[in-house]
Image (cartoon, rainbow, N blue to C red; front, side, top):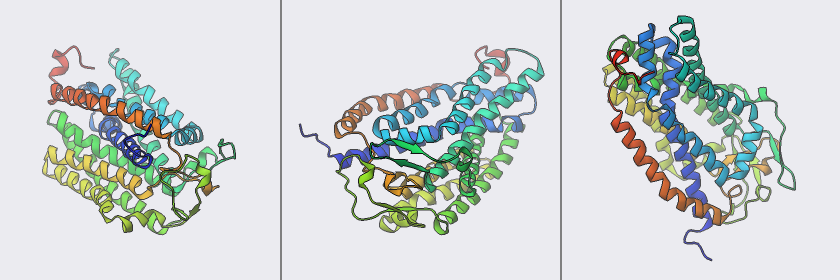
Length: 382
C-alpha cells in the first residue's frame, strides 16, 4: 500500500518532531532545573526556600513528560541513535537519572521534619537535581557535535570505544557550562514571574544577570570552536533520502568547519543563532528593567535558539562517529521503517495536541505568584 507521505518527508518530520520535544523539555523542565540550581543562593531563610520550591512545586512532575516523550520518540523513530547513544553514554545517562530520581524525593521529604540540617540536606539535593542534569545534557550535546567514538560492524552491532572521561574535552565543557548558564537564566526569569516580590527577586535578578552575560559569552566561544576548531563532518557524494536505514552505505568524512555549511545553503537558518544571542540580550534587558514578561520571553527565545542551532548546524547528521565516519548516523540512514514512521505520526497527531491542551490548562489554573503567606494557609504546598 502506498502511504500518503514519502519516506524522506517522514524522516524530516520526525527529525523536527524530536527537536521540538527536546526544546519543549528544555523550556518547561529547564526552568525547574534552573530554579533548583539557584535554590541555595537566592533563598536564605526556610520560608524563602519553601516559597522558591513552590514556584515549581505544582508543575515539575508534568514538565518531565517532555523528557519521556523525547526519549520514547528517539527510541521509536531513530533506533540506531537510541542504541548507540544510550549505551555509549551509559554512565552519563545513569548520572542524569540518579539526579532526576533524587529530585522528587527531595520535594516530598524536605518539609517532613523541622530539623534545619534535614531541610538543608534536601535543599542541596534539589540543587544537585537541577545542576547535574544541566551540565550533563550540555556535555552530551557537545559530544554530539564533536562526534562519538563508536563503530558499527557488518551485522550493524554498535561498539563504543571511548572512556567515560573522554566525554570531557574543552569544547564539551564549554557546552556543559553554557547549558547551566542558559537554564539558570531561565530559572531566574521564572522566579521573576512566579515568586513573591522582595529580596528573592533581587537575588534572582543578580544571578540571572550573570547567567545571561555568561550565556552570550559561552555561546560565542562555542561558535568559535565550530568555526575554527577540528569539528565537523560532511557526506561525500549525494545522500539518498529515500534509501534503506543502513549507516554503512553512507560515505562520510571528517571536515573541520563543515557545521557551518548549512548556513551558506540555507541562510534562513541563521535565525537560530541570532535568537540565541538576542534572546539572552532581551532577558538581560528584562532583568535590568524589572520587566518579568520580557525576561522570561527572552530566556525562552534564547533556549530555543541555542538548541535549534545545534540541530540545524548538524543536519542531516544526528550522531557522527570519530573513529569510523562511515558509521555516522544521519536523518537518512538511521530511521525506523517507512510504515513505522507513518503510524507513529498518526498517533502523535492525535495525542500531542491533547497533551498541549491539558498542559496549557494546568498552567492557566495554577498561574499566579507564590507568597510566603500562602505557606501558612495552604496545606497542599511543600
